[in-house]
Image (cartoon, rainbow, N blue to C red):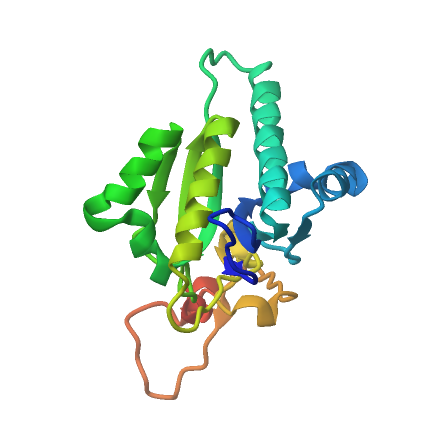
Length: 243
């Protein structure tokens, strides 16, 4: 989250960048059919909304613009998620509506200010907005950022985000920030017998797929060498280094 202008006359007259962490289904919801939903959000809010690419279980949604545009875009996303919850409940026996939940990605160096001394600041946010706010204790993988989860009614979430933005602007990040970048989903390796394991070699072998035969693989044994176990190497053994 960055500030590229300064506050003026005590108001929030700044340009911000807010990063959200979303699951694939959530991203699909705000993109909409043929990108119509996100296009409307961009036009109606005047904010820049970018979605990270890649075959990842999680995606980063970056919202940039003047504060009014940011909050308007945020409101549209929150209300869209509430609409999704209501629609999903039409085919569910559940009677109580679950809260809308959004996750911000915030530099870890700013989380102390967000929590406050003895948790005073985050307690104040919860009480004044009615939203639930949780700051992750651990940093996101390979980054210096943490997830800040906000849950509640859309109106409560919007008010909470405004307060979080004020705190972030008053306490800029310290030092360099390593941004969180979700990793692509690991390609499965299919072993004989239908066993499936995630590809430990990562994206560099994204196109690798191993299909092993059911019969055991013979192992050459030196003359005079005796072995108490079977002189065959099973497919699982031959690829035990991948485990």
